[in-house]
Image (cartoon, rainbow, N blue to C red; front, side):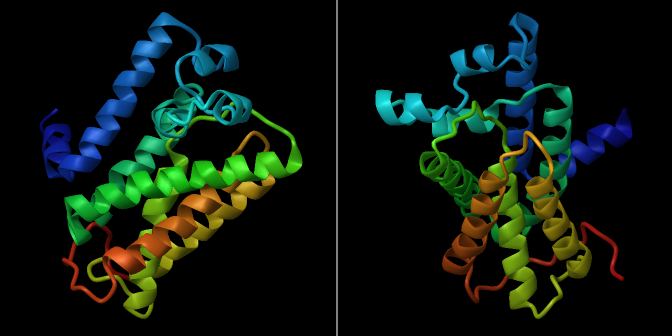
Length: 209
Protein backbone atom coordinates (compact mmCIF):
# COMPACT_ATOMS: atom_id res chain seq x y z
CA UNK A 1 0.00 0.00 0.00
CA UNK A 2 2.85 2.38 0.79
CA UNK A 3 4.36 1.78 -2.65
CA UNK A 4 1.02 2.41 -4.35
CA UNK A 5 0.49 5.59 -2.33
CA UNK A 6 3.98 6.84 -3.20
CA UNK A 7 3.40 6.00 -6.87
CA UNK A 8 0.14 7.93 -6.98
CA UNK A 9 1.69 10.89 -5.17
CA UNK A 10 4.44 10.99 -7.78
CA UNK A 11 1.99 11.33 -10.69
CA UNK A 12 1.16 14.70 -12.23
CA UNK A 13 -1.96 16.24 -10.69
CA UNK A 14 -3.86 16.67 -13.95
CA UNK A 15 -3.00 13.16 -15.14
CA UNK A 16 -4.04 11.61 -11.84
CA UNK A 17 -7.27 13.64 -11.80
CA UNK A 18 -8.14 12.46 -15.32
CA UNK A 19 -7.43 8.84 -14.43
CA UNK A 20 -9.52 9.03 -11.26
CA UNK A 21 -12.41 10.72 -13.09
CA UNK A 22 -12.44 8.03 -15.78
CA UNK A 23 -12.34 5.23 -13.21
CA UNK A 24 -15.04 6.80 -11.03
CA UNK A 25 -17.38 7.41 -13.98
CA UNK A 26 -16.83 3.87 -15.23
CA UNK A 27 -17.64 2.15 -11.94
CA UNK A 28 -20.68 4.34 -11.29
CA UNK A 29 -22.00 3.48 -14.76
CA UNK A 30 -21.06 -0.18 -14.49
CA UNK A 31 -22.85 -0.41 -11.14
CA UNK A 32 -26.05 1.09 -12.56
CA UNK A 33 -25.99 -0.62 -15.97
CA UNK A 34 -23.98 -2.44 -18.62
CA UNK A 35 -21.02 -0.46 -19.99
CA UNK A 36 -20.68 -2.91 -22.88
CA UNK A 37 -24.19 -2.14 -24.11
CA UNK A 38 -24.24 0.46 -26.89
CA UNK A 39 -27.73 1.77 -26.06
CA UNK A 40 -26.80 2.28 -22.41
CA UNK A 41 -23.58 4.06 -23.35
CA UNK A 42 -25.45 6.22 -25.85
CA UNK A 43 -27.91 7.22 -23.14
CA UNK A 44 -25.02 8.46 -20.98
CA UNK A 45 -23.07 10.51 -23.53
CA UNK A 46 -21.29 8.23 -25.99
CA UNK A 47 -20.67 9.68 -29.45
CA UNK A 48 -23.03 8.84 -32.31
CA UNK A 49 -22.95 10.72 -35.60
CA UNK A 50 -26.69 11.17 -36.28
CA UNK A 51 -27.33 12.57 -32.79
CA UNK A 52 -24.41 14.97 -33.11
CA UNK A 53 -25.17 16.11 -36.65
CA UNK A 54 -28.96 16.06 -36.70
CA UNK A 55 -29.80 16.86 -33.07
CA UNK A 56 -26.88 19.19 -32.41
CA UNK A 57 -25.65 17.10 -29.46
CA UNK A 58 -22.06 18.28 -29.87
CA UNK A 59 -21.35 17.71 -26.19
CA UNK A 60 -20.98 14.02 -27.05
CA UNK A 61 -17.62 14.79 -28.66
CA UNK A 62 -16.42 15.62 -25.15
CA UNK A 63 -18.46 13.37 -22.86
CA UNK A 64 -17.53 10.28 -24.89
CA UNK A 65 -13.90 10.83 -23.84
CA UNK A 66 -14.82 9.80 -20.28
CA UNK A 67 -16.74 6.62 -21.14
CA UNK A 68 -15.37 3.12 -21.76
CA UNK A 69 -16.78 -0.12 -23.11
CA UNK A 70 -15.95 -2.59 -20.36
CA UNK A 71 -13.14 -2.93 -17.82
CA UNK A 72 -10.50 -4.02 -20.33
CA UNK A 73 -11.07 -0.89 -22.42
CA UNK A 74 -10.77 1.27 -19.31
CA UNK A 75 -7.71 -0.56 -17.95
CA UNK A 76 -5.74 -0.33 -21.19
CA UNK A 77 -6.38 3.38 -21.60
CA UNK A 78 -5.74 4.35 -17.98
CA UNK A 79 -2.54 2.30 -17.78
CA UNK A 80 -1.18 4.18 -20.78
CA UNK A 81 -2.40 7.55 -19.53
CA UNK A 82 -0.96 7.27 -16.03
CA UNK A 83 2.55 6.80 -17.47
CA UNK A 84 2.63 8.79 -20.71
CA UNK A 85 0.31 11.51 -19.44
CA UNK A 86 2.46 11.94 -16.36
CA UNK A 87 5.59 12.18 -18.51
CA UNK A 88 4.15 14.83 -20.81
CA UNK A 89 2.56 16.84 -18.00
CA UNK A 90 5.84 17.07 -16.10
CA UNK A 91 7.75 18.02 -19.24
CA UNK A 92 5.52 20.81 -20.55
CA UNK A 93 3.39 21.84 -17.55
CA UNK A 94 -0.23 21.47 -16.50
CA UNK A 95 -1.84 24.07 -18.79
CA UNK A 96 -0.22 22.94 -22.04
CA UNK A 97 -0.81 19.30 -21.14
CA UNK A 98 -4.50 19.93 -20.45
CA UNK A 99 -4.93 21.78 -23.75
CA UNK A 100 -3.24 19.00 -25.70
CA UNK A 101 -5.27 16.30 -23.97
CA UNK A 102 -8.70 17.84 -24.52
CA UNK A 103 -8.15 19.57 -27.87
CA UNK A 104 -6.39 16.49 -29.23
CA UNK A 105 -9.19 14.24 -28.01
CA UNK A 106 -11.80 16.47 -29.60
CA UNK A 107 -9.83 16.55 -32.87
CA UNK A 108 -9.72 12.76 -32.88
CA UNK A 109 -13.47 12.52 -32.38
CA UNK A 110 -14.12 15.10 -35.09
CA UNK A 111 -11.95 13.23 -37.60
CA UNK A 112 -13.75 10.01 -36.70
CA UNK A 113 -17.09 11.75 -37.26
CA UNK A 114 -15.90 13.13 -40.62
CA UNK A 115 -14.91 9.63 -41.72
CA UNK A 116 -18.35 8.31 -40.75
CA UNK A 117 -20.02 11.14 -42.69
CA UNK A 118 -17.93 10.23 -45.73
CA UNK A 119 -18.70 6.52 -45.56
CA UNK A 120 -22.28 6.86 -44.30
CA UNK A 121 -21.58 4.19 -41.69
CA UNK A 122 -22.15 5.30 -38.08
CA UNK A 123 -21.30 3.56 -34.82
CA UNK A 124 -21.58 4.33 -31.12
CA UNK A 125 -18.12 5.26 -29.91
CA UNK A 126 -16.48 6.16 -26.62
CA UNK A 127 -13.11 6.13 -24.90
CA UNK A 128 -10.17 8.32 -23.93
CA UNK A 129 -7.89 6.84 -26.58
CA UNK A 130 -8.12 9.84 -28.93
CA UNK A 131 -6.89 12.12 -26.14
CA UNK A 132 -4.23 9.59 -25.13
CA UNK A 133 -3.00 9.42 -28.72
CA UNK A 134 -2.77 13.22 -28.61
CA UNK A 135 -0.42 12.79 -25.65
CA UNK A 136 1.59 10.29 -27.69
CA UNK A 137 1.67 12.67 -30.64
CA UNK A 138 3.00 15.46 -28.44
CA UNK A 139 5.71 13.18 -27.08
CA UNK A 140 6.63 12.15 -30.62
CA UNK A 141 7.02 15.85 -31.48
CA UNK A 142 9.35 16.30 -28.52
CA UNK A 143 11.33 13.25 -29.64
CA UNK A 144 11.67 14.67 -33.16
CA UNK A 145 12.60 18.08 -31.81
CA UNK A 146 15.32 16.53 -29.68
CA UNK A 147 16.55 14.54 -32.70
CA UNK A 148 15.38 11.19 -31.42
CA UNK A 149 16.03 11.72 -27.74
CA UNK A 150 13.67 13.09 -25.13
CA UNK A 151 15.60 14.16 -22.01
CA UNK A 152 15.34 11.49 -19.36
CA UNK A 153 13.53 8.83 -21.39
CA UNK A 154 13.92 6.36 -24.23
CA UNK A 155 12.52 8.09 -27.31
CA UNK A 156 13.05 5.17 -29.67
CA UNK A 157 10.91 2.97 -27.47
CA UNK A 158 8.28 5.70 -27.18
CA UNK A 159 8.03 6.28 -30.94
CA UNK A 160 7.97 2.54 -31.63
CA UNK A 161 5.16 2.05 -29.11
CA UNK A 162 3.15 4.94 -30.56
CA UNK A 163 3.45 3.68 -34.14
CA UNK A 164 2.76 0.07 -33.15
CA UNK A 165 -0.36 1.03 -31.19
CA UNK A 166 -1.57 3.22 -34.05
CA UNK A 167 -1.03 0.42 -36.59
CA UNK A 168 -2.83 -2.07 -34.35
CA UNK A 169 -5.92 0.15 -34.44
CA UNK A 170 -6.06 -0.09 -38.24
CA UNK A 171 -6.09 -3.89 -38.27
CA UNK A 172 -8.23 -4.56 -35.18
CA UNK A 173 -12.00 -4.74 -35.30
CA UNK A 174 -14.11 -2.46 -33.13
CA UNK A 175 -11.35 0.12 -32.78
CA UNK A 176 -11.91 3.76 -33.76
CA UNK A 177 -8.62 4.08 -35.63
CA UNK A 178 -9.55 7.49 -37.07
CA UNK A 179 -9.90 8.91 -33.56
CA UNK A 180 -6.44 7.48 -32.80
CA UNK A 181 -4.94 8.96 -35.95
CA UNK A 182 -6.67 12.32 -35.46
CA UNK A 183 -5.59 12.49 -31.84
CA UNK A 184 -1.97 11.73 -32.65
CA UNK A 185 -1.77 14.24 -35.49
CA UNK A 186 -3.47 16.91 -33.39
CA UNK A 187 -1.18 16.20 -30.44
CA UNK A 188 1.88 16.58 -32.66
CA UNK A 189 0.63 19.88 -34.13
CA UNK A 190 -0.53 21.25 -30.78
CA UNK A 191 2.87 20.50 -29.26
CA UNK A 192 4.49 22.29 -32.18
CA UNK A 193 2.31 25.35 -31.49
CA UNK A 194 2.24 25.31 -27.69
CA UNK A 195 5.76 24.06 -26.96
CA UNK A 196 7.79 24.79 -30.08
CA UNK A 197 11.38 25.45 -29.11
CA UNK A 198 10.63 26.19 -25.47
CA UNK A 199 12.73 24.28 -22.98
CA UNK A 200 11.19 21.23 -21.32
CA UNK A 201 11.93 19.59 -18.01
CA UNK A 202 14.02 16.45 -17.74
CA UNK A 203 11.77 13.67 -16.45
CA UNK A 204 13.40 10.30 -15.68
CA UNK A 205 10.20 8.26 -16.15
CA UNK A 206 11.82 5.47 -18.21
CA UNK A 207 15.35 4.06 -18.08
CA UNK A 208 17.89 5.30 -20.57
CA UNK A 209 19.00 2.86 -23.28
